[in-house]
Amino acid sequence: MKTYLKICSAVLLSTSLLLGGCAKTGPTTTETTRTVSYQDQSYTIPANPSKVVALSNSISKMIYAVGGKAIARVESNEKLPSEIESLPSIGHTANPNMEQLVGLHPDLVLGLPSQHEKFKGQLDSNNIPSILINYDGINDNIPLLTLLGNIFHTEDKAKSVIEDYNKKIDTVKASIPKDKPVKVAVLRATGKSVTAETPLAITASMVRELGITNVVEQHLKDNVTSKTVPYSLETLTVDNPDIILVVTMGKKDEINATFAKEMTSNPAWNQLQAVKHDKVIFLPSQWFLLNPGLETPEAMAELVNIIYGVKVQLDK
Image (tube, rainbow, N blue to C red; front, top):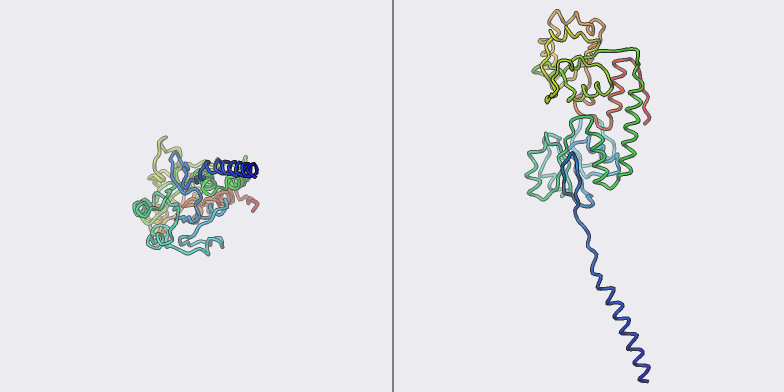
């Protein structure tokens, strides 16, 4: 009997030591935050953000394209995809309702420095992580898609979207007739002035990407820092482009009055090649004033259609 008890005690002791040995590994720790990088800056965000708010619907479109989700949207004059349209609105991009935004308890807010820097302190005081994304030019699109894939852990989906995006742009470029050189001028018309776009602006940057000659560029210095520069009718007359592309910003009546004052009321205007051949094109703001994001290939295809009369078929 004593031998039996000793054996049982030994077994129990061994079992206890075995279980105790397992317990000594300690509890598993889970990281709650991580660091992501964008444009040479690092940001601390939740490890798995699930309540994201984008203060730009163009960014929201990219979020859903890479397989992510958002919990709110901002107002828009354009038709939005149904999954974004169904989200609650928190006001306009330039002036979101911050009380409503904070009340949603987001774990990450994505905004634009030019419009949302003034709200950074309020987000920080409410312990809401944020990334203010420089998203002015078409060259920002691919880095942003990569960032969003990282944020939502959908890197493979983001890579697929980027491949499709690049394929479409290559298709647009390949459609340009090589035997038809064309000179264009890209103007910016507002209610106050008529200027010329530099390649830092959306339309002029697309023209450059397509390899089309923009007569304005010959007057620019190497270190251009502005999206627009002064450009007189006198200079336009000397450059005499085949096509004039006009990007508008502001109220239509005020724009027309300013354009007439600075351009069309002068007899020299009617001597321009573009005017004689009815090639002065006013472009819609949706694609040509602000970064069209995922629709950049479609915007570039529209430019090719306007400039060369070539309709580019892009796969949906």
